[in-house]
Length: 289
Image (cartoon, rainbow, N blue to C red):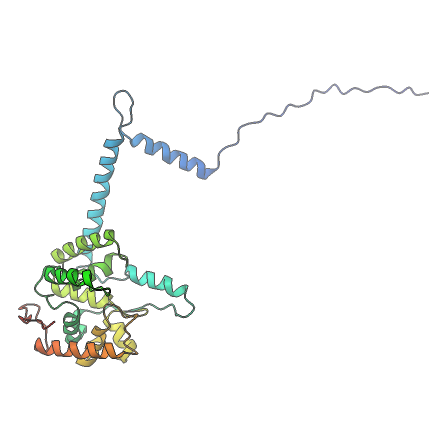
């Protein structure tokens, strides 16, 4: 007979060591960045962090970067075309979320010589008749707009072509004191760096003439089937009449108000002698506004 024998397991059970898990790579990376940033904060001899000194240094660095980038871009755009503007990108975003609108961005850069002199004069007559005379700001127009806006619900603007160009090229479209302050800064440096011809060239190549239509060449092709150089007086006055709000005033379906404004622009163009002279400004003594 076999006797049941009790078999004992003499083997010692293995002990599991719980090692701390390694932090994920993003956490590791962020921790390293924070350590490096912390070392940049200045300290006194007792190891106390000098936050005031740190933020002063940071402000100076940011200011130098801001002035360097903005002045550098202004210098580049004094001879390079402006490929895109913040408004173009914003309009594309708005169009993509609106089922009633097509996503469209038509923008063809041409030189000022390839834009009709009629259109150059028309936008000056419609938007800024002291364009050749001022240095970026029309203080008389600003004062008149301020007095008008105090007593009228419908607000009147006083932005010059120089201001509109600075806003279109460098800034986002909105109404805020920050944006207005930056507009003043960019207007100042563009007037310092760019000639009046260059400002006009950039303005007429970046201004919005319709939903997704930017610049004189794209507008002339889209609305009239011709190049910007071939625009006549009536077509130029019509394009200028929808500014600065071509989504309300439409070139393709001009309202009675737009037609009336078109005739007014044509009359102003006659007062200018039908031409604009950048070298010897021919601004009429009395604009007739």
